[in-house]
Length: 408
Image 1 (cartoon, helix red, strand yellow):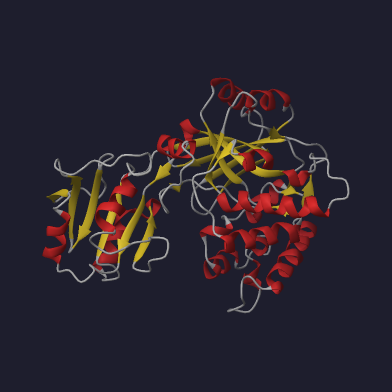
Image 2: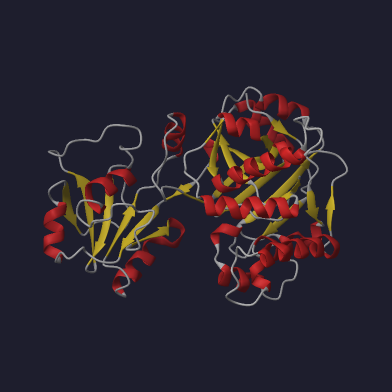
């Protein structure tokens, strides 16, 4: 059973929403965040990446950064201003990017269900990243960015969501990247809450560190509480929940700095031991089980050769796993793509032109274009309680921080 809970959102005034809304904290570095927030005192990046208002070179995990986050948050509440809803509610969040549209339910999800596996995970988290967001939540007493969840679509939920979008929206804005963000506040929530009770499982699509940090923050706040009852706001975390039928995953491509001491011909011959190679291939593989490789100004198509032993296992059968296990590791010597500095990851939104540019400018020796991991593959891995290989999924479009905040 999926428990969702209405909440009293802290939010900007509609006329200020466009200035407040910002990209998620973890998709930009400090310099990029500083540039995006330049000239806009209302940008939520001043809260989510507060080091942008401190001298360059400031340690982003130092005490002064978290104190600055609190200072900036309080200033934004006062000057934007941000207001807190008088009654708990659910919201709908629609994203439109080009021809793609998806609508999710904004709610609070149960940390108990996250801890017990009713909310499934597919990614390992890093302790340092957890430490950062846990401290950020505890200092602000707020969850400022939602976790992106999905579930196997159910018609009765789709129908309720569709009917509710005929009302006037609370926010309707187009971000600088061209993505349209529309949010509705729902006056009636009981039927949606009841419908989600028939959803057996929720799945984290994006935001594993935010979810893990919310769980850790709950543990600390629970220990500080004199009368913990289990219904306090800190027992829930901010989410936007989209049906799997509307999700869009783009490829997460790879570049490698060198050929591990091999000449180009030696490299191609080594690949032929497991793959068939075709020349003048398309920049993007046409389907699962195919890879495109850019090398020496040419695109090659790769496919496991008929004589190759086929992988078995939910994770091993993924295209990202096959590329790693049959090529990146044995040929290019990349044992751990989490830590190897010779490999870089290029989100599919940047296109194959970026792969060509990096190789043509000698910033990489070879590039690999992958077929996107499917939503069903992600769900299968999560259901098996296994872990996706790093950098397997690139979700687009992305949610904006600062529009709906859950105070704890």
